[in-house]
Length: 296
Image (cartoon, rainbow, N blue to C red; front, side, top):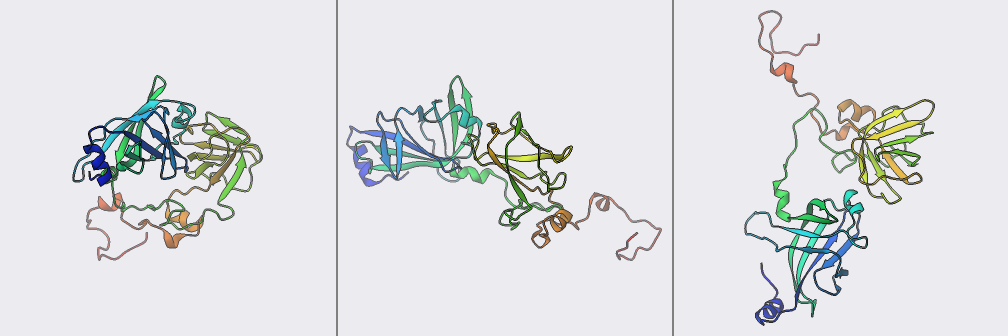
């Protein structure tokens, strides 16, 4: 790692005034600053709080494409990182930056680490969080799948479908919640049965605001009532009165793209590739074998 000359001079001086500072940027835009110094530090528009209950071990770094990593640990505190926010998934994949800084002159500093938060383990009122370097992304599978169904995500840059169109989303006030997973609405008409299956369920207001779930079942019940069930419980349960947004679901089939979303021009699958029956077939003597296509 190359340090600025001012920091090199400070390190060469023998007696140092150094501290570590970390900035955590969650996906909902919240930025939190932490330092292991005994007073707050401020730079780059972030206040790094002392005594916040978070510190970090030494950062391991190497040359080449090896993954830089470290570990952050600390106490769960109501004014900093809370157990409630961790359970809600608010720190999953959060961006992390770590500096070595001269606390006597914060302009003298070096960015030592940049990456994301990985696995977070809670135990006895404290937490340990893995810090993953930028090279971690190289461990992820890349490329597209040659498959009959669409490989795009509904509404993304490849699909290009606008989920803000009337009829493809609905915003509702939460009425009844069960286990942060099953939501029941007394009056929810205007959409076909199973219209929202495989869609997204977003919490817009309340303590759970920002959480997103995937819809497993969407059933129209007696009268105009509706029951929406998620695949997995949200990390924090929305409360009655909170506002949620439910988006239409896509099963990635060609017919769904064409008929439900009228978006077949952007279909990213291969619906006409041969199936397993064709791959396992063999030549037979009966019938016409001229290589042409036939419908039977």
